[in-house]
Amino acid sequence: MPLSALVAAVLLLLAASGRALAASQELPLFREAPAFRNGPGCAAAPTIHIAMTLDAAYLRGSLAGVLSVLRHASCPESIAFHFLATRPRRFRPAVATSFPSLAFNVYRFDPDLVRGRISSSVRRALDQPLNYARIYLADILPSSVRRVIYFDSDLVVVDDVARLWATDLSPDHILAAPEYCHANFTSYFTDRFWSDPVFPGPLAGRRRPPCYFNTGVMVMDLDRWRAGGYTRKLESWMDIQKREARIYELGSLPPFLLVFAGEVKGVDHRWNQHGLGGDNVKGLCRDLHPGPVSLLHWSGKGKPWLRLDAGSPCPLDALWAPYDLLRRDDRDDLFADV
Ligand SMILES: *[C@@H]1O[C@H](CO)[C@@H](O)[C@H](O)[C@H]1NC(C)=O
Image (cartoon, rainbow, N blue to C red; front, side, top):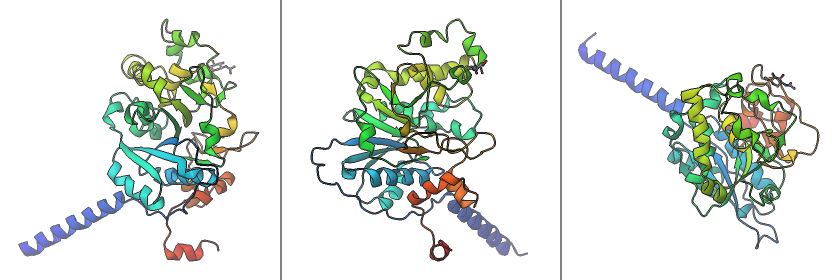
């Protein structure tokens, strides 16, 4: 082969692999959601601040979550969204395309804040730095945001989020979340933790018995969080886990339990019907817990969009599907209802 042909062939190969790389990093395209308008009686409505994360793996889930909040809100135009992303400029257009009139901001979350603090857990997905971004909300959001609702990206809200926003945190609670006191709290920490003369100490001084809560749905008083330096408190447990002793197995949850369990303001369980992603090992389907439902949360290994795409959804995944904004090409549309 003449040299020029060889060079051309190499260049062609490089170009092709470059394109393949670019394509693999491209985000899917999403539809524009309908516009949601405030109803009567919203003039005096408070601004509701909601924080979520944005990344490539969960973008479809985040957008579905936003749509679900807006669809069920009595005052959707009074809601401000605060998104955390490691690459804000990459994700801002996706949100703006689906929600052209949404009040939102995308803040940069620096993954280096936690890289040195993450120890590997049973589920790799839980080790992503962005999974720890909720710890830094009080630092990253402007100080004018004094209360925020944090939502995971694998949930849909089917009630007026104003009801959750109205949670009473008085006299001095920092966090509100549904608590699960029947769950075995001991099992979230290692024997090494419980046998240590110092580590379990702080749990003994709590106002109420420490109970498990899920960090995917939280109402946070950011003023009190900032004043009390809670980000540093969470970080110090992560530093112990990373440098001193293996005190837990899961990702970002145990530090929250260590700092807040027994001091959480309880929220009705209807606001976090969690576990719908199924079991962490086999990914089995889960049913709803008894009682009313205001929020469905696909925590656990399985995600509804992946199971729907794979053609093997769990029964409750049908409740997520109406909020899916993924744009399908014309051919998909044609066959969607067949
Ligand atoms: C709770 O979990 C711990 C550690 O995994 C175990 O030793 C204990 O027996 C469990 N308690 C109950 C009531 O199941």
